[in-house]
Image 1 (tube, rainbow, N blue to C red):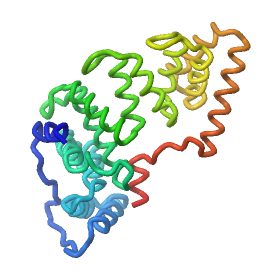
Image 2: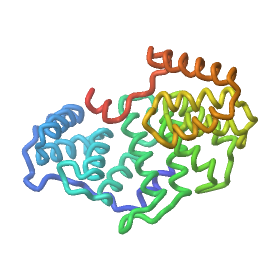
Image 3: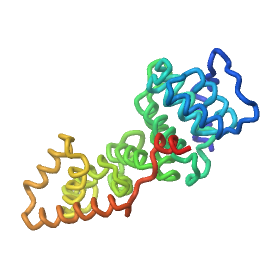
Image 4: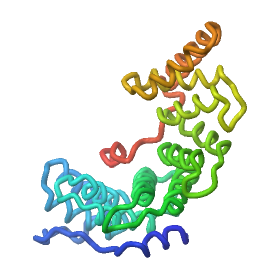
Length: 273
């Protein structure tokens, strides 16, 4: 897909291998190499982890590329290097961005797209210049094709604020709703605020207060979410408050019971490989 070819043209794609060149069984499958590398990573053996993960990546394993990117992004067993992380995430986008959105590699691809988009949104000195238009395209792909809640939230914010393209609050609210239903607390708060105040959508204070209450229940220590909820709660009538809280508690109960379970996150999925 052209969107990912454009991405990889912006960075030099290189391999990252362990300097010692550990001997790996050439008959290992990509999955076996990934499992070996991930176990070495958890044991703190950077040399073995990088060698095995590179082997898996070179044999078509998206999760291995993603994990290498995450290691360089966070300085985890290696020196922190955003430039290398960007290159690795770009390889995931290029090689797997048009893959099966329901396959076992999908959580890693979606997370790589979101992280890559975040790099392009703000830019990284010495690696990539800010490119909010391209970031928005990456978020849209991860949101629409892979159904990633974080991508849906970030895309909604860009649409809401008019970053990287035209402002569209109505479409922003639709993306916020998709992420909110998957349990994204930021999206729940933003959607609730828009509905309660009638920002870019028809004003529905009851539904808005419900989402604001859900966000507060899900993130009780967040001062921004708490303040936004308290502001709306203080202006609502008592009957509306009771109805919103009851609806929020019901939603939380249903979701805890698995009615609206969120797709597995990439690191959780990696542990299950």
